Length: 89
Image (cartoon, rainbow, N blue to C red; front, side, top):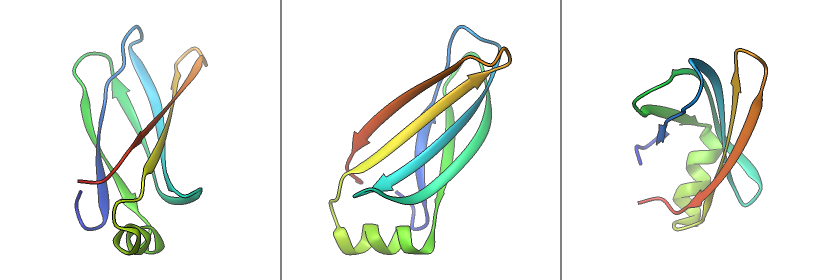
């Protein structure tokens, strides 16, 4: 984890292009957001920039669990959501 960003690997399949929205939370509080357009194929690395309060929360809480909600919308308007949980390294 960088000082002010989370690095996330995002990959999609079955559609040409999708708009992907990422929201990172710690203990229910939003600490960062990102929106990217992802092409089908290889996974893409995305940086989720942290808010000032978010980076402070991570520093103060140490090993608190991060919840990352990822919502992808394709060109036809179909939407899917995935939630991932983990701890910073």
